[in-house]
Length: 443
Image (cartoon, rainbow, N blue to C red; front, side, top):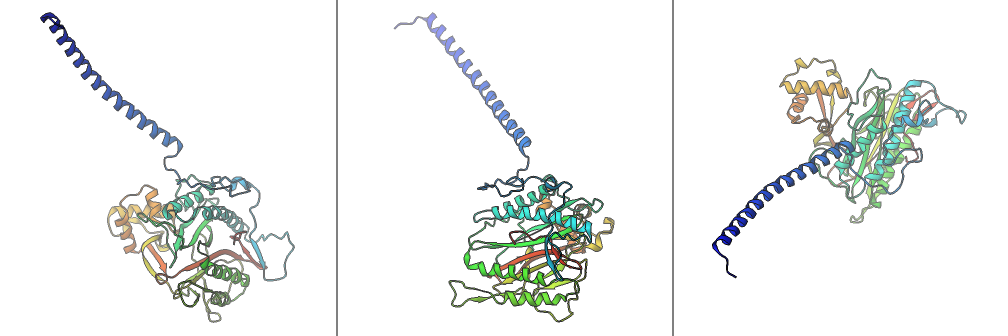
């Protein structure tokens, strides 16, 4: 085919026009793609904000956990189920002649009401905790999830981290960080940043957490394990706690409880398949139960984990509240400090301290003011500060610890490679016997 000069010029113009249109189309298509991308990002961000800006880790549960009307996972405040109705009375143990079956203790009425409410929250949360603490689960994620449930069941949003409101006699909150001490670590461990431990088949975990209402604290703990070899270890501390509390009552020598605890724990042994002989269990002798005061987790008298001498630990008195916690170990039966630290508490002597008198940078003084306002004399974890949005606080925190206005509580561990167990209940002594507030169908 032959094309003359005029036709060739027209074709060149057409090619140029097509080229220009292609450039324009490419330019605008990029703009359209960018606009579409930005639209999708903004839509996703808006959706996340509406759904939950800081979602609780998603853990699938096989079936409903509750028959009381609580959701699975639990989200509803416990007071929604009771309103003005009384909370469940704890397990009653008689030191004198048993009363009628419908007997309800009425001494220290406000304290008992607060303790019963906190105990019901504890029971519902620990039911959930048992369902999520499974092999293969991140310890850090589980801790965040369970602590969020405590806040929700106390009647707060999951982002309400304040635990201390002494002027509000209905305030209900977490009393100290969720303890998930595992294996040779007996107490004072909660996951912190960069802790990537995933629950293993051989782990034995002490789940220890507290709930308070108006400062009256329920301190209760239980043990989870997956290896049947460790059944006797868990059973030893469960039986020791249960039987020791049965001895409690007005005017009882506290050393009698310690004698019973050591007797029971030492009667158990663990038969490790890779060892020639069973390992005889030991009570952890330098850990103990304790009295519990208002907004004060350790207050006054102690309940030893081992044999005592007569009046060495004093006597129980009517109206006193105790947390009886027993620890059994396949190791030495003695704990020592282990780092890093995951539990801190403003010292009681510093509650009235003016921040201006604290030596150190201004950021330490500001942090102290926030800690005292948010937590008072209750314990907290660096994980909580991070969730509150605090950044680069470790230097300020170390300064407060160095000055003695904040106390650091390291992990408490027996020798590496051993296993430890724990069970704990909170009870009040009455003229007739004891009410074990935290008792439930599980332990």
